[in-house]
Length: 131
Image (cartoon, rainbow, N blue to C red):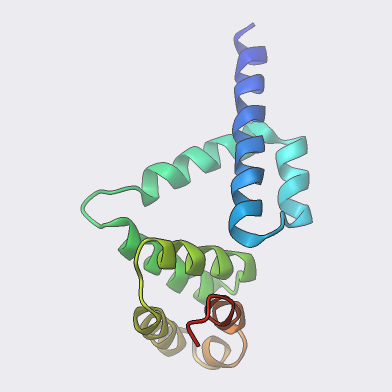
């Protein structure tokens, strides 16, 4: 019975995650939806880990989201860039702070950090009327 209830709990977490993603991104990327629907037991621990890692601690959530953005840019994860830009803004990051993050990421990644990887960040800033 414990496995069944854990599965039900995982399904609830995965469904809540899909709702949150839709709220933040305006849509749920098909691969996220497929993972939530088919392996909620994998998604749920990730969601809990994200919450634990990104909450207040020695670093405030804004700083953590800016770090997440830098890593997303360095890794070339477009959905992650969009997510962490939105979350950084929601935690009080300024346009200037986000551009400094992009500058640091460009230094650390070279050409890709300047040429293509910042595109989703710029799209979010434009959509929010910041540039």
